[in-house]
Amino acid sequence: MRTAIYPGSFDPVTLGHLNIIKRAAACFDRLIVCVMINSKKQGMFTPQERVELLRKSTARFPNVEVDYSDGLLAAYARRRRAHVVVKGLRAVSDFEQEVQMAVINRKLNPGLETMFLASSEKYTYLSSTIVKEMARYGADLGEFLPREIVEDVNRRMQELQERKD
Ligand code: PNS
Image 1 (tube, helix red, strand yellow):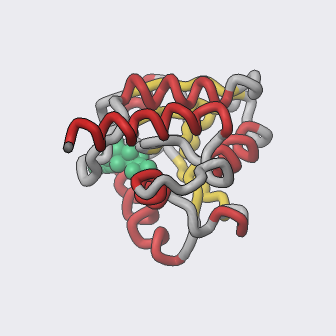
Image 2 (image 1 turned 60 degrees about the vertical axis):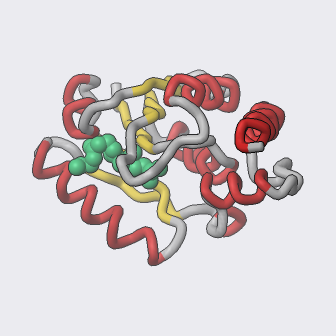
């Protein structure tokens, strides 16, 4: 069975992520979408909540599994017997950091290849950070998030703003 892992912060999953999930799931027997910790980012949702949002958004893909790990991607891939990591590339600005991570991951786990999928041009501008910024100002998120989770994101943003007041 050919298994690939699509790792990320997914805070929250966007339509850009979902587009990569759909295309990667068509290339492998099984795709594990794994919520992982990016030490440079602060979360709007807990990792468990992100897993739930991903599960809601990917329920229609039978060969997609959603998981969480707070460890190293290279070790997680070894444990799950996956030899491929899938990443989406939006722009040249993503490239340097992604290649650095791919090289480090292969150093830690020589059997692990990283494959990049070019983002759909519809989503090159989209990121979880931008979505959170738009949510803060009450913009309509329907074009940017899977419809199953728009309410969850709006509700969480409202809670965060009420907590601040
Ligand atoms: O969506 P992101 O924030 O770009 O995803 C980055 C992520 C979470 C995939 C990356 O930070 C990661 O792999 N974290 C797990 C720890 C790890 O293996 N780091 C890379 C080698 S030091």
